Amino acid sequence: MKKIVPYFLLLIPLFTSGCFSAAERYGEAWGGGGNRKRAAALDVVTFPIQAPIVVPAYLIVTADEAADKHKAQAQADAYKQFMPLLEKDPALGLKERWDLKKDIHRWVFIQSFSNPKIKYTDALLEKIHETCPSIQDCVFSSKSCSKEFLAKHFDEEFERAKNPAYQGGLATIASNPNTPLDLVEKVATARGYAGGVTLPAQSALNQRRWERLMPLLKNDPSIAFRERWDANTNYVKRVAFEKSFADSNVKYSEELLETIYQSCPRIRDEVFISSSCSREFLAKHFDEEFARAHKLEWKGLDNLISNPNTSIELVEKVASPRNYHYPIMSGLQNVITHAQQILAERRSEQIKRAADSPITNSLDNPK
Image (cartoon, rainbow, N blue to C red; front, side, top):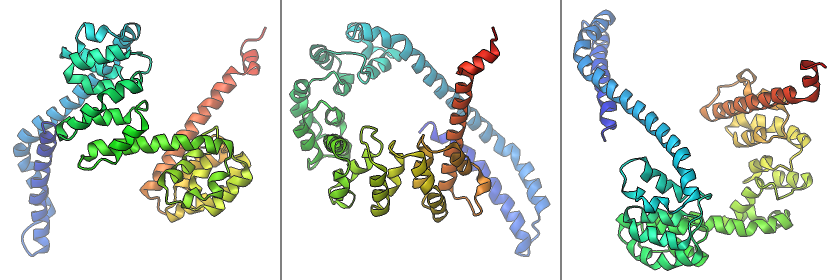
């Protein structure tokens, strides 16, 4: 609320000044004595009234932005300084009671549970959970939590979550990949619980189910097309089919990719993400996707230029606004901006490779 008020105050003078000026300008059209010069003069006259509101509000907003930048930098520095200490001794945060400190130590302690490099034992996690009530929900996010530890606390958190003020623990347990699948399903399908609990559980459940389907696709990439997972009412299978193109371990033949592209309109755009796409395959479909962008269908083109196998010449064509002979909508502008970023990165890589090549080095350092 404190941050909203200054922004609101900045709008008040603009609104009032605009109203006065508009009244003067439109007064002329309505037969009154208003004119643009008087409107401009009114803006100048009302400035002393606006200034006491605008200037303090502007200073507050500027100070808030500076404080946010300072806080972000302080957190980054603290992460580098203190996280290695916890990697060496995970019990340090508990021994020195970082949870009670009103400084950056508390933030680092909380972040440590999401750091896979810090190996907490179940005994230590239990001790932190019992001793540090203000951060006990964060404990469940650690990948060090065993299935037994998570299951042990499940019933307690399931009961606590009936109160909307205490949903964090159950939501975090449900999101941990080590939690037994049947417990995640129980939360995802629970009745009478707020979305703050059930939605993370449903997301985690779908993720676990997708992971179970991926080995099938790795062994036989054609199974999803044969069984038409794209048209399946089973949401998990459809999403697994889509995600398979981004998995480099799923090897599609170009013939199968072409068949999927032509036969599965729901997921045709995802085909271009696959690392199995050759430069020729991507070039073959470029003109069609470039034309589809004119019809407000941009995702295929965006995925195509994102594939590292796409030639730099095609990325250049998308990156140049001069190649569009129609109004550029915001969605397409995002694709153009993305292409410009990709182009800059690939040119930078080319320059670096050229600088590191033996031929360049021999020319720069002749014997």
